[in-house]
Image (cartoon, rainbow, N blue to C red; front, side):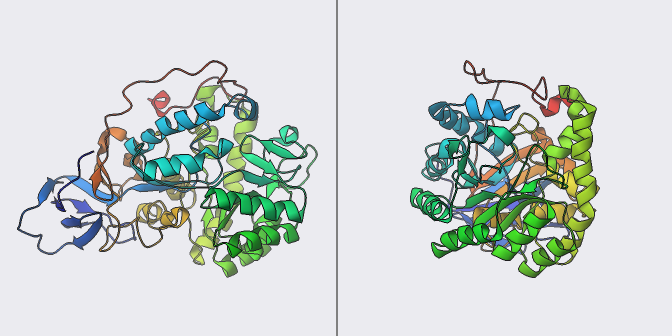
Length: 440
């Protein structure tokens, strides 16, 4: 891609800054890869001028929970037993372009099949393949009773995106191995599904001492820790142990809320998967029972999550894109819609959660995610006003321009659907991939 002129001016656009301010008319001046001016009198000298008349200029979306290596499986069996390392990497490099076309300029892939996330991130940063800014983990840390795959999880070793650890020494060794490999995050599946569990959500599969061991090993080497937590005790213990990010945080009780607020640990509720299944599951032949379960998770959790938000806990948007219910490129706006509809946030608050707040997930808090002086020029130009209705962000035809570091990204790809390699797909809870055009 050709290097743009040193100075670019986006003129006549409506600016949403991603920090919660009301939209305003302002010119945005970019020099090299950063924003150097918002508003005021634009420079008159030699520069490239981009007319944004009738468009909104805003930060690109940052998806704080995306599984780029999974390639939209319909079951854990498909995910664990029907993927190959080389193809997973190649296909991930293809799928990541769909995020760009959807206005995503950054994402966190907290765990990846075969740890290909590290290589994909490095390929993007080196300009080998186009893609958003990316932060990644390696194998999620599991216990034999952890994860969401039940009895598919082995008693030891690797499976899919997970590594089973059985002792404190194994925890420390695995954390250090992943950091040596180059991860940005260590992910822990703090909860999982067991056959006869009796509590709401999932069962906590780690002791507090084990969680402390993970955090100590990771933080010693300056790497943050993110936890998958669906259940009150797990949320409380992750916050008390010093986790840096909590995914889901559903079914909180008062003790968990107190711990989260005291720690100020950011939360990524990731309701898009549940909302898609609850609202559109009939389009992929999902049964009413499973749809009701996921609808209940939203309904049972929103009040506590809103209390956490009102107490100052950062709330980030993540979509769990990468499953058949959340295919790449289709649903990256959806968490904003759920934040407005179910958490009661305003559109501008939801946009902040998907931009400047979500920058924490990719290690660029204060560096990107806002139309502000000094920030990286990771921007989208969209036909419509998301401050009135965040759903306009889901119409890819309205996304007219995507910039990362002031450079235009190609939005002409992909032109058509690809085929799947032999043996790549197995379906259990749905007969189709829930692409957004099924709603039309």
